[in-house]
Length: 131
Image (cartoon, one colour):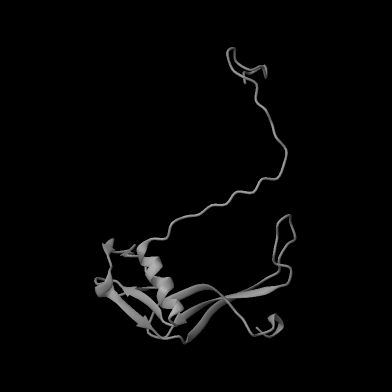
């Protein structure tokens, strides 16, 4: 458009469409995330410990973003399934088109015993009022 709101010469008009559209996005998982998912199905939580700084990443990333070094099978460790809730939030869904959640629910960040933080984990088997 020009300063006078006229389309420049030689351009086609723009067609506006007003409707809801559903798009499915499928992103392939990195091999390290496939392995993480498989170990979760086996009942184990794994992480990678950075060989330089010692930080533990759960789920494993395949690298340490702080030291910028690669991590791999040699850096894998099995973590405890217990820990301390460091943070939580109760989410009350706002209804909008396509919203599937209707009741309040809780999420938590957990510092696992032995290192590593799991973020945004569902709090289940506990009424939201008792969180």
